[in-house]
Image 1 (cartoon, helix red, strand yellow):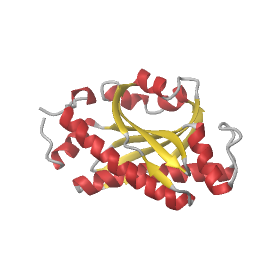
Image 2: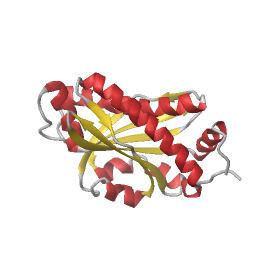
Image 3: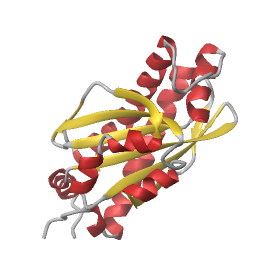
Image 4: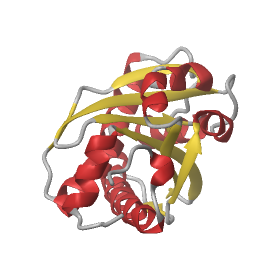
Length: 207
């Protein structure tokens, strides 16, 4: 029987997703170090299954200001990926590259938007490449869409997809050490269930 929603994932499925998270985070750390020219390390990411309300709470509550970078997935895997930057992470990016911190998360200048969009694209691509290399799949990624808003508003964008997967999402909690400072960011993966079944089938993971 195929998986109908992420609540049905067993321990083996979660282990596979953790391995993808580990590889993706490692790829992201290497790419960030090159882009920012700052020493960058990654702690072992935590992969969680959260419902919509818990994801909002985990990100600081519905009124917390953050930046979301959303990409749509097509090809062998269909769905969405949403990368959420907290202020500390976004400011560290601009500090490393431009020598200045973000003054207002809701009023980013052109250089800040360009940098954060590029970092979001790098982060999403790092996880996509991890899936592609492990499963031998072709996955296409849309142009990233950046939104600076309250967490509740950012997560409302893919709300329809949340409902289709049983109101649960795959939540990857990343912790980077950049230039000796520990900062966190979060990846939310919202795959179509058919794609998730295809992925586990390609990796030889049974039910």
